[in-house]
Amino acid sequence: MSRNQLSDLRTYPRPTGPSRGKNGIAGFTMLEILISLVIVLLGVLGLAALIIRSNQAEMESYQRVQALMLAQDMADRINANRKVITCYSNGATGMQLGTGYSGTPACAAGNTQQNARAVADMTAWNSLLTGSAEVLSGSNVGAMIGARGCVDQIDPATQTYIVSVAWQGLAATAAPGNTCGLNLYGTDSLRRVVSVTLRIGTLL
Image 1 (cartoon, rainbow, N blue to C red):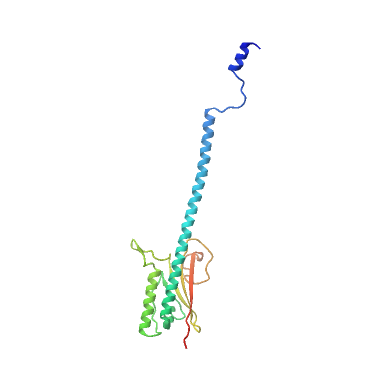
Image 2: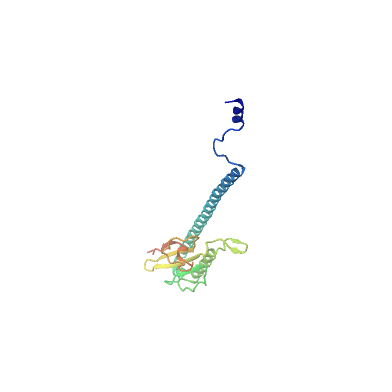
């Protein structure tokens, strides 16, 4: 092989495989960027859903703690004025306070002072259920969503009563067996209830 032929081989080497032009490189880079953006977007959406769920769980927990405190508050009030416990439950009819409360019915049990104490207790509890303990921009925000309190007579012979607090949850769950606030929150799977059972002893 002559020197000229060798020079030609060095100057014009034979192609050894496929090559990408500038357009091919740019197109492949753009595809990589789009795939990366999709992955990042999915991650951000997942994080946003996690934050929303976390806030929802925090709110549910806060409302439950508030409800337990309110239920115990009324149980303590009744214990302090137990001789007219039927005033708190409106006899066997049951009493419901909070959202939709229309006023305390008259009670003939006990003396005037005990009756006045019962009315004052229920008025104060109603205010707590409607959130008057904390006000923001003129609105009551110190209680649960749609809070309602119930005092029901379970067994007059043993003087057993139940104090319940119902409110609206943020996500559907199993409907509670307690009837406080029943059918007042749209779907019953959004209704939440906590309760405290009272049994007033008879001293001999």
